[in-house]
Image (cartoon, rainbow, N blue to C red; front, side, top):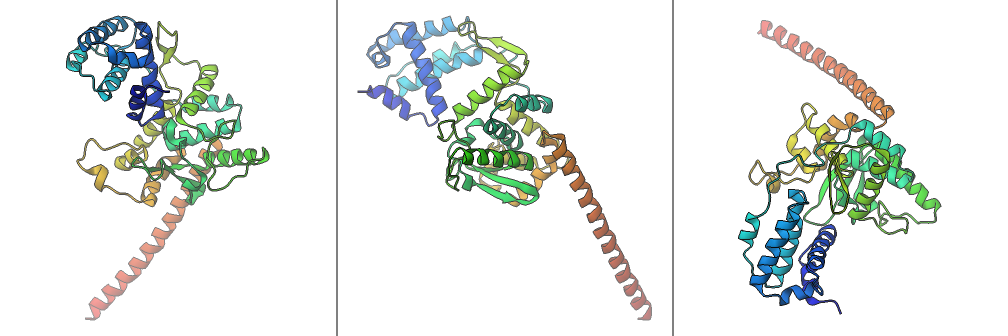
Amino acid sequence: MRQRSVIVFEQAITSEASRKNYSYWLGRFVKYYRIKDIDSLLSIEPKKLQIMIEDYLFEIKKTFQPNTVKHPISALRLFLSVNDVTLNWTKIRKFLPKQENKTAGKRAYTTEEVIILLDNAHKITHKALILVMASSGVRDQFVEDLKIKHLKEMPHNCLAMTVHPDTVYENTTFINPEAKKMLEASYQYRTKQGEKITDESPVFVTVKGRSMNGINVSNILSRISKRALNRKIVYTNPNTNKNRYDVMSSYGLRKRFDTILKMTTGINIHIVERMMSHKSKTIALDTSYFAPTVEQSFSEYLKAMPQLFINEKFKLKAELETTKNKIKDSKILENRLLVLEAKLAQYEKLSKQL
């Protein structure tokens, strides 16, 4: 039977990715001290356990990045807290190092790098995944519980995508025509493989036909970026020899989306934050009271959409359509001006008669 302390610990974590991460760090601590199992931590006298954690922290500070050191401490604190073990965590936090060196993952992907990713994505599902993430700015967990019924047709051959539907994390962002075309091609491929696609079908599936999760997405993008891109190594973990790069394999797409939208003239920043699923930290109660419609959000998205395209063909089409709309609007304004001038002339004539 599974140990109850571990069950309680896992139940306290809502995210699957966080659960695996915390379990990993908890396991490293147990292995470091050669403890029989995780449950045996609870049998250690608190004063002794306090010293063990402090000594462990002093040791890992020698080799781990400051931001990484926080993970094992957070995992230990959660496990012991939910299992009613009280330690002096204020004292332990005082020993945590400050991040002074340049951290990894600060940069966004360039359009040229996204093109390389697409060229090296050998599966059509992976190409669709990259384009959808590049056009919508979603986190890699967006695939979880995402079904075809959560995609809604929008003008200009776009889609509105409801992420994390029916949860407190629900938000709406958009998929441009380039991503939509590749997504539809992935559906056709799945159909040829014998899958029956319905509104209840997952938008993205694994090779085994199961709905993808955030870890699947992260692993896919990590593999493609490692073999395709020559990214700058910012830090190498001396224990695992794993590299950290200047641009993150998954979140580099999200940062590109955020940067493009916020650099677009005249765009509503608060709506951009909603599409990014960010909670407002600048305006009190903005998250609760600011409620733009899907159409209003889409209107802002269209302002930046030409810059989000990866393929130059789609960008040129969007610019052509924008130019045509401006000419059309110009003619409408010109006709409106003629009407107003005619009405003004009538009023002036009437005024003279009076």
